[in-house]
Length: 360
Image (cartoon, rainbow, N blue to C red; front, side, top):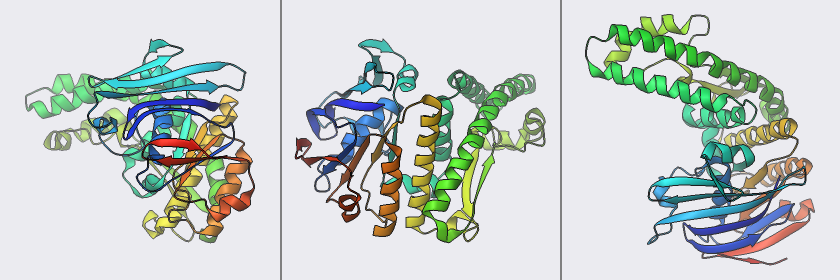
């Protein structure tokens, strides 16, 4: 898919912007703080309903305004055009598809944007929540029942945690919620396992290509509980501990996955640059899998390509991107020599104080 037009209102320092985009490479150049990353955030919002930055949702709204809005026009591989949009006002996020109000989850089914940015190394080195979110975005796009199953599990988890914190004699109620939690966990875990199995060879191939010096990659998935035991038995055996802590310690909400290497058997052994290259491999593997299942590439955003990645590895990253054929939104303070040498047809834009001017 391609994002042919982007309209932004009151997002961070961008007051109002209408932008036509090239179907290929789009390069946004400007000083730090000019608003380049906000352009990628806007596209990402249309696909995820949130920013890839960790700031609070209200931080996205331009100072002195009541809310923000982002609208886009998508060109799909089947020749159709879709109009998508998100707006936050009064603390609520509203989604639109072809000018009709829809649930945010419905909008996400129609829009796919993947981003690689300076904080992406946290996908490798950070907390498990980010890796679950990454995995679940991919599962969502290939498993039609994922969202409803995920919501069912989250409801059961909230109810069980509330009972654990109540302090009363609620054993019978906990038995019921243990059963419901385990029932909801089964399809959720099965979907994640299927997706991870499909992602694994693509990610391993890219990891070998980008980090050959580290030897063979090894990928592992942990469902969040001992898969050799039944989850109801685990919940029952850990009930006293869960009561003391006030939350459920085992289940899909604790799932995690990892990529380690022959020469770096622990993620702590990776340098920051290697973490970023590994994260890029994850983002591109997910994009490749999306393309294989959906029949079209997601839009790919690359924020500050040169940050902590040496010139040789920049060339490797750019070769992977060029081979994809995906629409690319790339930012930087200056044009990387590796990008200039790559020779793609590039639409260049200058960004200054939230305003964008096309150069070529």
